[in-house]
Image (cartoon, rainbow, N blue to C red; front, side, top):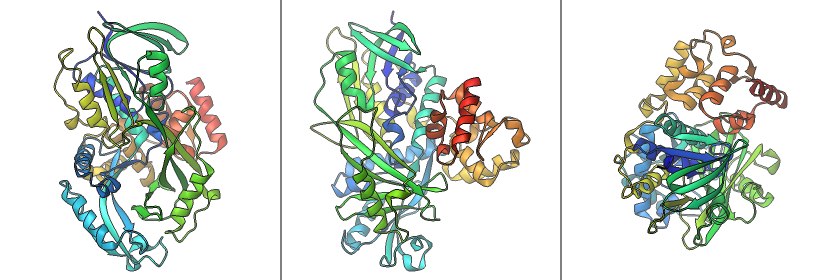
Length: 485
């Protein structure tokens, strides 16, 4: 008998989504991640849950409708991680005509039930607060509803839900060889120790490493794939409103500028072909300049490359013959051979659905429960999306030492499970040492114990974005604390 029903290589969003879905259907699941959960492209997304207006422009109506249906599901099952916002597109005389934008957004609204989100509106931004940050030539804008998401925490909480449903999650575990017969036999180096496990089915969900793993570890043929690099920049906050700005660039691309961690703005995305090692990916200077110039075309405050606090890049694969946001799932079930699922690419919005469809392909091989993830909240997400502010107020009532900003960050990260982090603390001192104004020893211990954090960067850049504001000395103190913990 095999050790597991389903083994998954790769702890990005695709991998953990497969683990969560399969574990909830009753399968014995193990996930192997050589680094940290969401340590690559899954933490370098545009952080959007949306139907994608560019797809609508290409007449991909079914794809947009499907994505907007998933948006509604995410609002229901992850209201702490997925936040509705108003997106603003300033009309530009040199780009798409205003009437075309208006018609497109009305069509966008019609493709889904808005689940309480406001409809598209036309704004005179010369007399509206959203125009304060913009140059004066822009007098009209269109406002519509979509969502932003904390992509890194979405990965971690999906893995946490999988673990609570019985999945084994192993970070720092690298699969170095896989032999295929009627079962899979995997050689794994797990934090320096080599061991062998067996599984009845295997998934290769290694993102930018998919073709490398297929060739060197699985030794299985794969179709031609193309590596794509996506990049964004982080700059100091450019506007006071809670809107996301959508800018039409001169080359027809749509560029997003969204609030990030209160004091910053995320601008992206630029995408191009990539060659090289996915572990060593850096944003090109030309791409930084491109995004700065695109933002400066609209914002009053000029954005220069010297303003960039951090550049964020990740690599994922697409089929060379068909590049799309829905990703690719390949299913190999040869006679007398254990099944193999290969999943790569795709965006955050449709990740849950991709995993559901992929796991369903295993149903002929062993019995399992029906699909379930559409209605099950992620850890901490058992409240209505429009009650987020109420959850913040409840947190401040219980832990009176929290400021408004601190409570918002903590509820956005942990939702209704915040008590597992702060427990019965009466003062900030009860939470242990402080690393900067936000991070405490209690939160660090929780992340190490429950969310697989092993190194400071796991906490500072994936479980949070506190690395943007912490000094070198505070980071060193965190590293020393974690080493002794």
